[in-house]
Length: 202
Image (tube, rainbow, N blue to C red):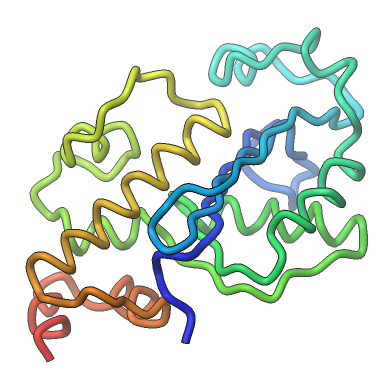
């Protein structure tokens, strides 16, 4: 049984919103958590093969200058596939990151066997009092120390990892579940908000 406190938390910065429209990854950041402890990190810029626009530069702080000497996506993603191994995966707004992970790994004929969970969906169930469920808002809500430098991949994945562990601790302390299966989190993330306590108290 895979546990929810042993996962790879990842975050992409990209040229746009969807690989379906030709957008590419420009940075990957990831944190490996084993038994609730951060054990390893992965971060690298990658050259998407074309310039990025001014909006993406200002949003991420990643410039064309920074990318011109970066390794191409295929090299970085081939290496990142090894970092993922067979771990389960977590991302904040996971549907976005999963689309890019799938698209970039397909280009290099790599696959992964782990399942995905979304920290944003989980936070909507557990932190219903938060003003919204953006990563920065939730980090403040959960009182996680932060210097506020969001929208770089490694920083966002580190903050997501800390948020993830905070939510697992919330489940443990409120519902007495010290060992939480990853499958429980996946099911909880799809449970209607008003049934969360009923589901966790079973």
